[in-house]
Length: 79
Image (cartoon, rainbow, N blue to C red):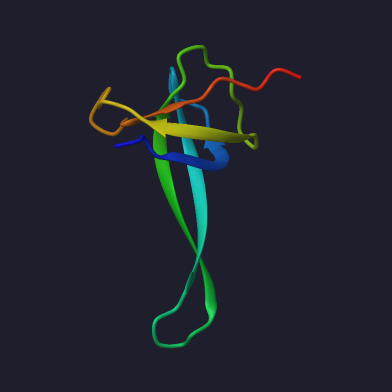
Protein backbone atom coordinates (compact mmCIF):
# COMPACT_ATOMS: atom_id res chain seq x y z
CA UNK A 1 0.00 0.00 0.00
CA UNK A 2 1.46 3.42 -0.91
CA UNK A 3 2.30 5.92 1.79
CA UNK A 4 -0.02 8.90 2.12
CA UNK A 5 1.35 12.34 1.26
CA UNK A 6 -0.33 15.44 2.71
CA UNK A 7 0.23 19.14 2.06
CA UNK A 8 -0.06 21.75 4.78
CA UNK A 9 1.37 24.79 6.51
CA UNK A 10 3.83 24.76 9.40
CA UNK A 11 2.20 26.31 12.47
CA UNK A 12 4.99 25.58 14.97
CA UNK A 13 8.70 24.75 14.75
CA UNK A 14 9.52 25.10 18.44
CA UNK A 15 10.33 21.43 19.08
CA UNK A 16 13.75 20.01 18.26
CA UNK A 17 13.54 18.08 14.95
CA UNK A 18 9.74 18.45 15.06
CA UNK A 19 7.26 20.63 13.19
CA UNK A 20 3.50 20.88 13.65
CA UNK A 21 1.69 20.95 10.31
CA UNK A 22 -1.90 22.10 9.80
CA UNK A 23 -3.61 20.25 6.92
CA UNK A 24 -6.90 21.62 5.58
CA UNK A 25 -9.49 19.59 3.68
CA UNK A 26 -12.82 20.52 2.12
CA UNK A 27 -15.81 18.23 2.55
CA UNK A 28 -19.53 18.39 1.81
CA UNK A 29 -21.48 18.54 5.06
CA UNK A 30 -23.77 15.48 5.25
CA UNK A 31 -26.87 17.40 6.39
CA UNK A 32 -26.36 21.00 5.29
CA UNK A 33 -24.90 20.02 1.87
CA UNK A 34 -22.49 22.95 2.11
CA UNK A 35 -18.77 22.82 1.47
CA UNK A 36 -16.98 23.04 4.82
CA UNK A 37 -13.28 23.32 5.60
CA UNK A 38 -11.83 20.88 8.13
CA UNK A 39 -8.32 21.10 9.53
CA UNK A 40 -6.13 18.79 11.54
CA UNK A 41 -2.65 19.19 13.01
CA UNK A 42 0.06 16.58 12.55
CA UNK A 43 3.44 16.34 14.29
CA UNK A 44 6.14 15.58 11.72
CA UNK A 45 9.83 14.70 11.99
CA UNK A 46 12.18 17.34 10.50
CA UNK A 47 15.71 15.93 10.86
CA UNK A 48 17.54 19.11 9.80
CA UNK A 49 15.22 21.72 11.36
CA UNK A 50 14.92 23.22 7.86
CA UNK A 51 11.31 24.44 8.01
CA UNK A 52 10.01 27.54 9.78
CA UNK A 53 6.48 28.62 10.75
CA UNK A 54 4.34 29.76 7.82
CA UNK A 55 6.01 27.60 5.15
CA UNK A 56 3.97 25.25 2.96
CA UNK A 57 5.34 21.70 3.10
CA UNK A 58 4.53 18.09 2.23
CA UNK A 59 4.60 15.27 4.77
CA UNK A 60 4.64 11.50 4.28
CA UNK A 61 3.63 8.59 6.54
CA UNK A 62 6.40 6.69 8.32
CA UNK A 63 6.92 4.26 11.16
CA UNK A 64 6.32 5.86 14.58
CA UNK A 65 9.27 7.98 15.72
CA UNK A 66 7.74 8.98 19.06
CA UNK A 67 4.37 9.08 20.82
CA UNK A 68 2.95 11.73 18.46
CA UNK A 69 5.24 11.63 15.41
CA UNK A 70 4.21 9.20 12.68
CA UNK A 71 4.92 11.57 9.78
CA UNK A 72 8.13 13.01 8.32
CA UNK A 73 8.69 15.98 6.04
CA UNK A 74 9.68 15.54 2.42
CA UNK A 75 12.87 17.39 1.42
CA UNK A 76 12.54 20.87 -0.05
CA UNK A 77 12.24 20.99 -3.84
CA UNK A 78 15.34 22.36 -5.56
CA UNK A 79 14.78 25.58 -7.46
